[in-house]
Image (cartoon, rainbow, N blue to C red; front, side, top):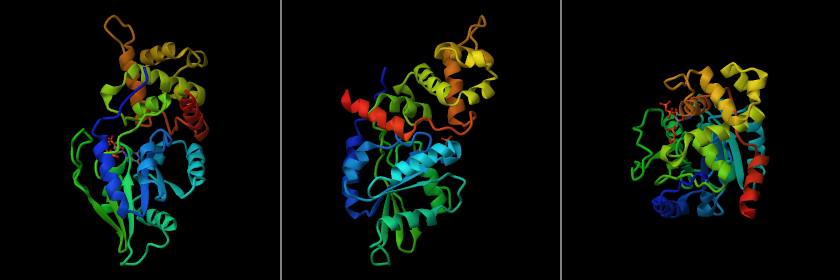
Length: 289
Ligand code: G4P
């Protein structure tokens, strides 16, 4: 069943962003580098119209470096857009962010015309982590739950450059089915919105096609079992990891959780579960449907 998750209070964020955008020069969107297409919010383009865009492929430390390069090229080819890859290990990312943002708004400099950057991104892409790094201290983290108001933040990146936190939460907007599965696998979607076994089977089918060697290594599989149909393979993974019910039968729910957790925590190595070409094809198929 396709995952649908678009909480009603998103319209409040919409209004707040529309209001805020008037005083903004560059819109910086944090993306999950493991799913750089699906973790983008298409609504943002609608809301921010002609403003230049800075796309940050965050968590690059857990993404496939070759695919990150491909995604950077894809985003950099879009008009009024710059893309950078980043991860939380970079202790002083401000200068790279400022340089990229300034190149998009060269007329904004000096104390009388400071550069104003708005940071946006769906839950779990690393906004709080980045803002904390930029602020140089641990700010209190507020929840991602519906209705939780985040304290608005303005971070000075330089004497004449500011970063503004998004007013309200920007929820994922699932426009193609595969994006829903990828968002769920990454942890960006509320747990009640999806079936873990379904998400694990979709993820597994993709990993079989693109990262079979990682599955072999992590779960000590042989060549025959890694080629099994996805449910049989998930059963095998469950057996290998001791995800068993009483009576020794494999607990598929536990096996699904093992796989999803291993993907999220990069126990399977650095991987990216969509390419620009695949994402474009999903969008085209979604529009044609
Ligand atoms: P958000 O504000 O956009 O919702 O995201 P947040 O900063 O809370 O980050 C979500 C999760 O992603 C956190 O893990 C955080 O540590 C992790 N994260 C952020 N940036 C990076 C990065 O560049 N690389 C990697 N690998 N992980 C990153 P968590 O498990 O939810 O919490 P915790 O481990 O920090 O306790």
